Length: 78
Image (cartoon, rainbow, N blue to C red; front, side, top):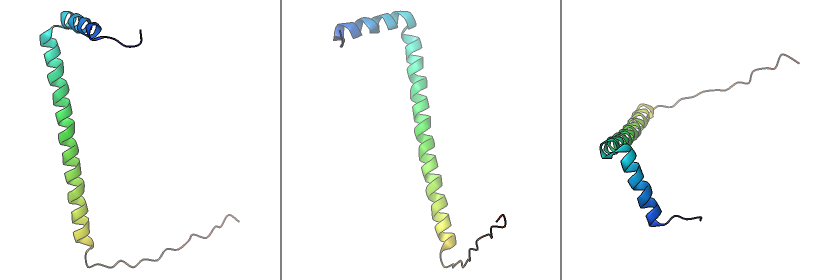
């Protein structure tokens, strides 16, 4: 009862094909594949942009020394 045999899955597949048809299932597959490809391309572009920004920041910081002093704000509510 807990696991399905291959025959159960084949029957489910045949029913899905009869209900939706092969053309509609093919279109759904193409849409899903296009979405995954677009996501991967977006991730690559994001990584490349982050790498370029990091390289530009490193070039801008080379040879420069920043001297700063931090001061605490006096608590006047006491």
